[in-house]
Figure (cartoon, rainbow, N blue to C red):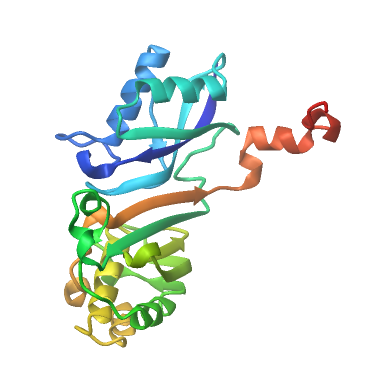
Length: 271
């Protein structure tokens, strides 16, 4: 018998072709499943909350997988971190309800995109982890562009074509720009029920062109209405993009359910 677990995975995407297994190249999924096979002695599938592209990072990617009954969360986390490569790290492992799936069970997904606007963005200690734009941006224009993204829209203009999809509609709940500490630039924070392929990077690329006065603010509405990516700005580079987290219904967490049901005096250590 087996139980389903959710791992919260961090990784530096620099050396990966993305999460998903590919015919060639090193993928996060292949590395994660290799460790599971070593631990359990059998091929074990792992499913992620989102499919990241080559060079994209994660600081909270949900990954679901089955494990034999005898494994506990703490032991799984220790074993995963002992065997995963140095550019991956498991922050947490939690038991989940039967049938849980990291992608299919997700309510929302959140990404962050970091841009360096100062000269030091070109440093080798920063360049692999942000868009080293090294140019000032009009933050007011960026924020005005982001407000136009709220709600449900057809984001066909901000997606790669040629991939079969039932529809291109996404519901954005968070879309905001913030200034990074120390004058290092800006970050875009976005959360939605679903994302299309390259959607965040194409949104950022278009908004940066607005922030550089290369195109007008009205182009956001125009592109959403047009539904054609031929007039969309090139996608921002992958280095600045981070999968931050996925959210799930609280009732799917077995450990949290048990903690909530425990008597109060059982949860408080003796003085």
